[in-house]
Each structure stands twice: as structure tokens, then as C-alpha cells.
Amino acid sequence: MEETYTRYEKARILGSRALQISMGAPFMIKLSEDELKAMRYSPLEIAKKEFEKGLVPVTVRRSTQ
Image 1: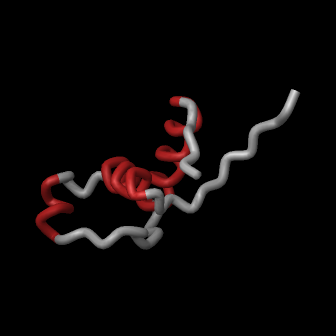
Image 2: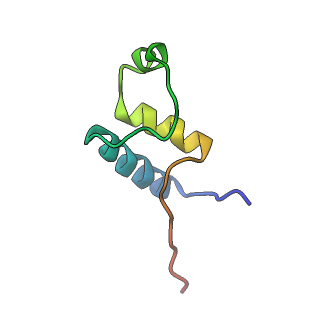
């Protein structure tokens, strides 16, 4: 079952993962040197690629009201 996220959840997930990558966390996706150059080694772009593949290790818990 595919999870759908609000734009705010997606922004938070991508921002958190991009911060992890910028601090030296290993990539969850295999990227060639050419792909990295094309995205200018941007942690946010790398996080977006990981998110698209469903590889970002983040869980969203929603409160029920």
C-alpha cells in the first residue's frame, strides 16, 4: 500500500534527509558520478531521488482526533 503524504510532510521528510546527507550519511540509492554532477551534488536532489524510490527511512505518525 502506497503512502500519500501532505506537501508539509514531504517537505519535512526531504529536508530531514537532505540534512542527514549533507552531514555525511551514506546514500540509500546508487548514483553514478555523472548523475551526481548533473544534480550538482545537491543533498536535496539526492533526497528527492531517494524519496521517489521509496527508500527514505522516515515514518510519519499522524495523531487521531
